[in-house]
Image 1: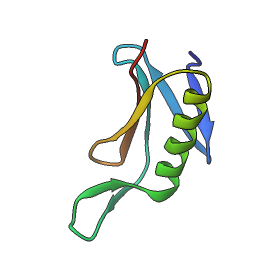
Image 2 (image 1 turned 90 degrees about the horizontal axis):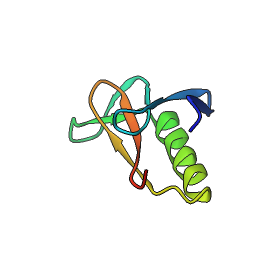
Image 3 (image 1 turned 90 degrees about the vertical axis):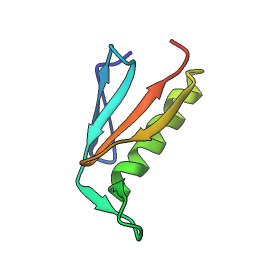
Image 4 (image 1 turned 120 degrees about the horizontal axis):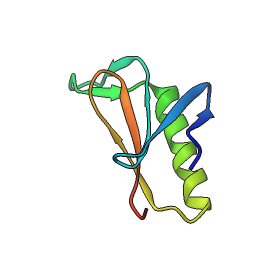
Length: 76
Protein backbone atom coordinates (compact mmCIF):
# COMPACT_ATOMS: atom_id res chain seq x y z
CA UNK A 1 0.00 0.00 0.00
CA UNK A 2 1.12 3.52 -0.72
CA UNK A 3 1.84 5.54 2.42
CA UNK A 4 0.08 8.61 0.97
CA UNK A 5 -2.40 9.11 -1.83
CA UNK A 6 -4.03 12.35 -2.97
CA UNK A 7 -7.44 13.03 -4.55
CA UNK A 8 -9.07 16.49 -4.90
CA UNK A 9 -6.10 18.11 -3.10
CA UNK A 10 -6.76 15.96 0.00
CA UNK A 11 -3.89 13.68 1.03
CA UNK A 12 -4.87 10.44 2.73
CA UNK A 13 -2.30 8.71 4.92
CA UNK A 14 -2.13 4.95 5.30
CA UNK A 15 -2.67 3.63 8.83
CA UNK A 16 -1.22 0.14 9.18
CA UNK A 17 -2.79 -0.50 12.58
CA UNK A 18 -6.40 -0.32 11.29
CA UNK A 19 -5.68 -0.79 8.14
CA UNK A 20 -6.92 1.98 5.92
CA UNK A 21 -6.42 5.58 4.91
CA UNK A 22 -7.40 8.71 6.82
CA UNK A 23 -7.60 12.41 6.12
CA UNK A 24 -8.88 15.41 8.03
CA UNK A 25 -10.77 18.33 6.58
CA UNK A 26 -12.97 21.04 7.97
CA UNK A 27 -15.87 20.21 10.29
CA UNK A 28 -19.27 20.52 8.64
CA UNK A 29 -22.74 19.99 10.06
CA UNK A 30 -25.86 18.71 8.31
CA UNK A 31 -29.43 19.96 8.79
CA UNK A 32 -29.73 17.78 11.90
CA UNK A 33 -26.55 19.30 13.40
CA UNK A 34 -24.62 16.05 12.96
CA UNK A 35 -20.96 16.34 11.99
CA UNK A 36 -20.24 15.30 8.41
CA UNK A 37 -17.10 15.53 6.24
CA UNK A 38 -16.64 18.59 4.08
CA UNK A 39 -18.05 17.95 0.57
CA UNK A 40 -14.72 17.98 -1.31
CA UNK A 41 -13.21 15.58 1.24
CA UNK A 42 -16.19 13.23 0.90
CA UNK A 43 -15.74 13.31 -2.88
CA UNK A 44 -12.02 12.57 -2.48
CA UNK A 45 -12.82 9.61 -0.21
CA UNK A 46 -15.32 8.33 -2.80
CA UNK A 47 -12.59 8.50 -5.47
CA UNK A 48 -10.10 6.70 -3.22
CA UNK A 49 -12.68 4.01 -2.48
CA UNK A 50 -13.30 3.52 -6.22
CA UNK A 51 -9.55 3.46 -6.90
CA UNK A 52 -8.99 0.76 -4.29
CA UNK A 53 -11.99 -1.30 -5.45
CA UNK A 54 -10.66 -1.15 -9.03
CA UNK A 55 -7.54 -2.88 -7.63
CA UNK A 56 -9.68 -5.61 -6.04
CA UNK A 57 -9.42 -4.19 -2.51
CA UNK A 58 -12.64 -4.28 -0.51
CA UNK A 59 -13.09 -1.10 1.50
CA UNK A 60 -15.67 1.20 3.00
CA UNK A 61 -15.87 4.85 3.98
CA UNK A 62 -16.39 5.92 7.58
CA UNK A 63 -16.33 9.40 9.03
CA UNK A 64 -15.66 10.54 12.52
CA UNK A 65 -15.77 13.80 14.38
CA UNK A 66 -13.82 16.98 13.81
CA UNK A 67 -13.50 16.55 10.05
CA UNK A 68 -11.91 13.08 9.94
CA UNK A 69 -12.79 10.54 7.26
CA UNK A 70 -11.38 7.05 6.82
CA UNK A 71 -11.38 4.58 3.94
CA UNK A 72 -11.13 1.28 5.78
CA UNK A 73 -9.66 -1.78 4.06
CA UNK A 74 -11.70 -4.89 4.76
CA UNK A 75 -9.76 -7.69 3.07
CA UNK A 76 -6.14 -7.25 4.06
